[in-house]
Amino acid sequence: MGKIIFYEDKNFKGRCYECSTDCDNLHSYFSHCNSIRVESGCWMVYENPNYMGYQYFLKRGEYPDYQSWMGFGDRIHSCRRIPHVSEGGGSYRMKIYERPEFGGHVMECMDDCPSAYDRFHYQDIHSCNVMEGYWLFYEQPHYRGRQYFLKPGEYRRFSDWGAISSRIGSFRRITDFY
View 1 (cartoon, rainbow, N blue to C red):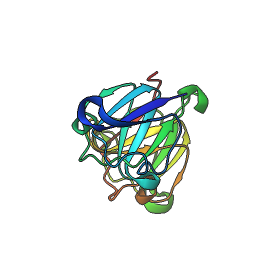
View 2: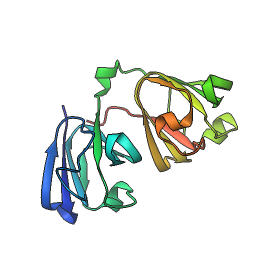
View 3: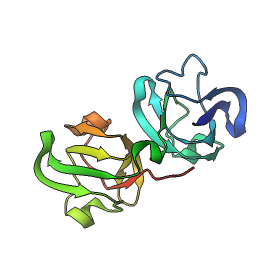
């Protein structure tokens, strides 16, 4: 399935907590997080409880300090396991819209996009319908900046995927990292 270990101190030291399922509030297990080891699976970890705040995608590997997962600080208070690609059928398809409530131009996507502007001539995505697969939106081109996890479903406005603005510079499929 998946296993992630959170450590209070850098370099996998201090109090730790092992997790193998989604957890909407990790605060009772540790007060801060300075290193993470992902033993299996792919995970999204969130700055705040209930899958809110900054989001970070982590695949199998070691993250000795919060900068190694591109974190802005040592706060991790919830986590979500990303299902294995075969659990989602292995296909990827979504529609992105330039306006809220599925308005304006629509583009159907089935593959990664390193630059939304180069591909679509706009980088503001106000709504999205993920029909198949799991996706990551990035605030900046070439998979940089804030990250947003999207699973199959309707996102009527950018705040539905946790963003504070409609600016999306790139996006990619979450493929089989196992």
